Length: 431
Length: 143
Picture 1 (tube, one colour):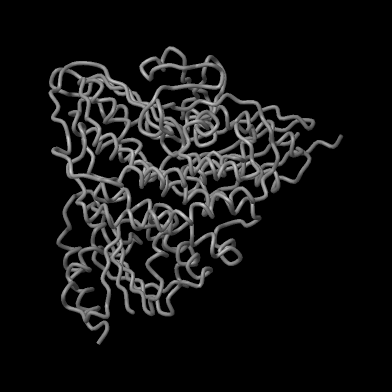
Picture 2 (cartoon, one colour; picture 1 turned 120 degrees about the vertical axis):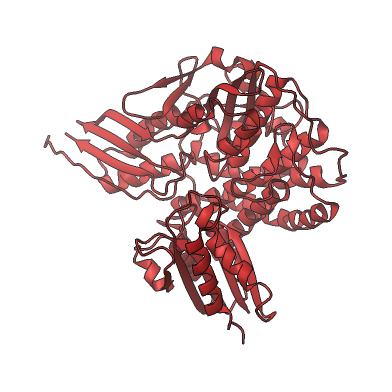
C-alpha cells in the first residue's frame, strides 16, 4: 500500500470551552497513537488556595470557570461546612438548588443550541444554523438568559456571582423578586417542553458503546447539589471515600490529569446522571421522557444532548417547585466557628461531578486543597470514545472529515477546560 | 427605540462601559434606554428586539494609547482584528448571530475605550476621563 504522511493543524475548534489539541497517528489503517491534550487550570488553583482563609475560597474557586462558577462555589461551600461540622439548614439547601438550576439552565442552553446542535444539523456554526432554524436559536438564547437571571437572583450577578458564602447566602431574595422570577420560569416551561421534543427529533448518529456511568444520587431528588456517588457497576459510596476508588494520574502528553475508577475510564455528566437517576425525575420531566422515542438508560453517547435538554426542563420544574411558597428566612446563613479538620464536597456541575477536599487549620486557613473537575474525569473516556468512533467512522476518510467527526465526538462531552476561546488543534500523522 | 449598552465586568478599567452608562443616567430623554451588562456573550441578542439604534460601549485593548476612543462598525469587527470580549461568543460572532436571526438593529454604533489593563479594582483616572468624554459625545442621543 502507498505510504503517506499527512500533518494538519486545525487551530479553530471554537465551539468548546477551553483549549487543547488532538494528535492521531494512523499506520496501515490502524490508530497507533491517539492523544487528547487538555489544558486544565484547577491544578494551579489548588496551590493558590493554600494559606487563604476559608471565607475567601468561594470567590477564588468561582474564577476557575466563567461558565460554571456556581458549581465551584457550591462544592467548596459544602466541603468547608463539612470540615466545620455545620448544617446550613433547609432554606439554604433549597436556595442552593435553585441557584444551581440557573447554572444548568444557562450552561445547557448554550451548549445544546449554540455549540452542539450545529453538528447534528450540518452547520459549521450557530450563525449558519440561525438562518434556517431561527426559532430554535432564539429559544436557546432566551433560556440561557433566564438561567443567568436565576443565578443573579441569589448570586447578585451571573458571572462570578458574589451572593453565596460558607454557611449560606449573604442576602435573601425579596418576595417581589421571587414572584417576578416565578412568572418567567412558568412562561419558559412550554419552551423547555418544546426543546425536549426538538432534541429527541434531531438526527443523531447511532453509536452504541460500553462505558461505566458515574453520578451523584440523592435520597429523593434528581441529583444536583448533594448526594452519594454511584455507578452502574455497583459502586455506592459517600463522597468521603472517593480517593479509595478513583485515581487521577498524569500522562506525559497532557497537562490535565486522567481519572479512572478501579483502573477504567468512566463517564460523568448529563447522560450518566440521567442513566442512573431515571427514578428521581420530576413527574412532568418523566412524562416528557416517556413521550420521546429514546429509551434510557442509553449507551449512545450522542444522547447526551437529549439528556441536557431534559435537564433544562428539570431545572425549570425544580426551580418553580422550590420557589413556589417561598418565605423569607429568619437568617440567610449559619455562622462558622472554624476549627481544624478535613471536609469533602461534591455536586453535579453541568458537565458532571465536581469534587472538592479541603484541609483547614484551627484559624480556618486552608492547608491543602484538592479539586477534581468533571472534564479531567471524562478525559480518558473521551479518548476511548474517539478511538472507537474514528475506527467505526473509517480511517480512510479524508482528514477534514476525520477532524469534523473528532470535533463532534469531543464537543458532545461539552468539555469545560478554561476560559480560552479555541479548543482543538488536530494533528494526524498517516503512514 | 434607542438603547445604549455598557458592557463590562467589575474588574478595574473593564468597567469603563458601565461608568459611561452611569454618567449618562438622567441626562437623556426617556426614549433612550440605558443598560449595563456583565459579559452577556451571546445573550446580548436578547437585548436587541425592537431596537432601532443600538450603541455598544466596551473596553478594548488594541495597542492604542490608553484612554483613546475607538469607533468601530460591525463590518469592521468581521475582519477578526478586534475581539472585544473574551468569553462565550465574542462580540463579532454575537453580532453576526443577531444578523442571521434578523434581530440586528438597523443602526449599530460600537465605541471602544482603550484600557491599559484591569489589575486594580478601581477605575483609573485615564479611563474616567475617557468615560466622561464619551458620555458628552453621547449626550445628544434621542434629541
